[in-house]
Image 1 (tube, rainbow, N blue to C red):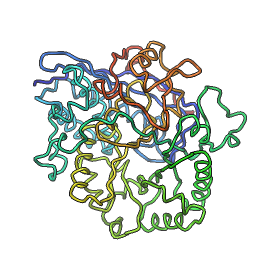
Image 2 (cartoon, one colour):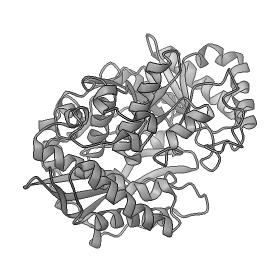
Image 3 (tube, rainbow, N blue to C red):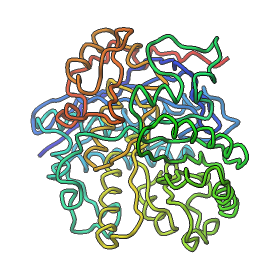
Image 4 (tube, one colour):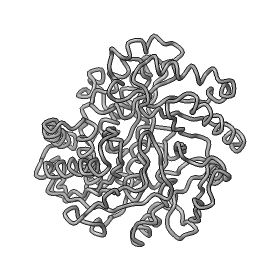
Length: 481
């Protein structure tokens, strides 16, 4: 197989949230979404691949003093460079071409002092568009080309323990066709209808309070954002527990997002033990699946800071998220005493495959180990980003995936009618028509149906015309006032 990236371009659309999303030190009220389009030649056949993602503030870098506009400019810079440096690259497999993009972007990003998570963001958009173009060219879905390793993934380049293994040896035999939607509860989200100020009430046909969401979607899994301040979080979690226990008729589970709140093991341990001592949370905490990224990325993989983590036998299951910034981040985290990592396409699809394979290999060697591969959201929405993310996590066998884009954005109402019609025609199992007439994510019994997603090349399955959006060289982000 001969693969060559012919050229690429970038288009953008500005999106407004339907309600503010407060996470960590940021509150998102608007964000651009970038679309990367590549033209790729696969064994003489030319195919188009498209990838998309939001440009979210305070995630790829977490510097309080840096303005949101500066962060958006940096995200666009890494996308610009990745697309530009990919043009003309050739190789026998998708993996070989991806490797070249990665190495070029790495040299460039390091020379400018960009953190790994940021410069790799550009690589991942090229990676996703390249994979979709390949799947279109060979007319096979992502799950199949991964399990047969047509992409040419060399797992031992991520971890030597995977030498001699291929994805098909360790991944599920088939992608999941249903997946639990884990609902995000942001730190400013209303829990009950009475928490909504009259002036803040929405009339868009979508649920607003946590209680409304539970009833509308049949939710059973939740992701709870916490501040890292024990007294504040005990009060907030007590209120959340009361709402969930009152409105969820059966079993439920949740995860906690630590939002990088801690810079020492002692501080986090004291915080966790404070939660555990709160009598009103005793039963609720038993439903916790894991705690995500409690330590700040500056110290989260520092063996000096976390020297006693593995010896803390009563620690909750812990995973990294923002700290999963390098190809070897998961092995380093496991060695320190973490239990796993999250998957987000914006951190790398091929790396996510390798991470899932490593965790499965270790599970087989130690069946009683608490090892976790979770799916987390970056306020992903369609018509591209959400579907591609679901296609990947379904292939990796993830059972519970945080979804929040459908809650903080009003479905696909911001997109042209032609796009809305395409998504409804292709993905009627994943989307439904809202009372406003635009596509909204369909969650029933707390689950998403992924039949159309896993049967498409990389989740999408229709030709999106990105020229409906603003070309990169004509786009001006509305500056923060």
